[in-house]
Length: 151
Length: 192
Image 1: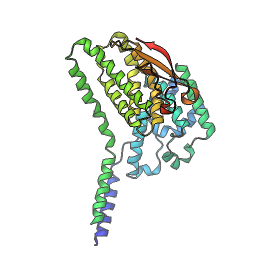
Image 2: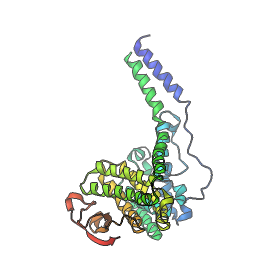
Image 3: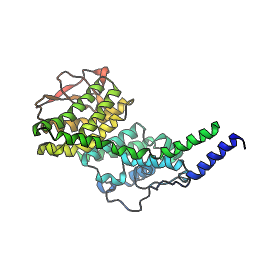
Image 4: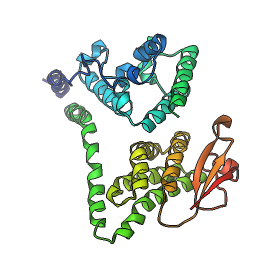
C-alpha cells in the first residue's frame, strides 16, 4: 500500500471510530415549571415563531436534523446548543431574576432586529426558521410589551 | 506520510473540539480566593474596597468606550466581571447587599458580553446601556468613598431612545457616541 492509501485508511478508521462517541441529546420530556409561558402571556402565533426559529438552541428540546447522528456534525451541534442554552433558555426563563428577564427581553429584541439571530449558519440549513420582516416586527413588539410590563 | 500526519491532526482536532466548553467554569475560583484574603483587612477597608472595585472597573470601561476603544472596553468588562466576583457580600451594608443581590448576576452577564466582544463596539455599547442603570443603583445604595458621581444622559443614543451613564467627572465624555459626539449629554443627577 502506498503512503497515501495508508493515510486515507487511517482517516477512515478515525471517522468510523468517532461515530461511537455520541453527545447526549437535548430532549426533555418534562414540561418545565419555569417556562416562559408561565411568566408571560405568550400568544399562540408568537409561541409558534419562537418554537420554529429559536427553540432548537434556546430550549430543552431540539428537533435534531439527520446529520446529528454523524460525527463530528453532532458534536458541533451539541456545542452550539450548549452555548445557546447558556445564553438564553426559554424553558428556564422563569428562573432568571426580574432584572435579568428585562435584559434578556431587550437583548432578544436587539439581536432579532440586527438579524444576528437566528444565526445565518442555522437558517442556511433550516430555511423555514428564517424570520420575515413582519415576523420580526411581531416578535419584537411583543418583547417590548413584555419588557414594559416588568418595569 | 504527509497524509498520515494530516489525518492524525484532524482526529486530534476533532477530539479536542468537543471538550472546549467544560473548562470555562473554573475561572471564578481565583477570584474567590483573593476575596477571602481581603478579609484580613479591617472591616471599613473592605467595605469601601468591594463596591469601589466594581465602580472603578465600570469607569474604566466607560472611559474606553468614550475613546471608541473596543479592546480597552473589553478589558474593562473583564475587570468588572472579576470585581463583581470579588465582592464580599458580608461586608456590605443591608441596603447595598439588597441592591447587589438584585443586580449582580445581570451586571456580570453584561460585563462578560462586553469582555468577549472586542471588535464589536456597537454590541458592547448595547450592554453598557443596560449595565449603567444597575451600577447607578449600586452607587445610590451608598458607597463609603464619599466620591462624587454624576448620572449623565445622552438623548441621542439608539435612534433617540437615549442612554445613561455614571461619570466621575462633571466634564462630559460620551461613551455611547464616542468621538463623533464626545460632549453630547447632560447631567441628570449628582450622587453622594
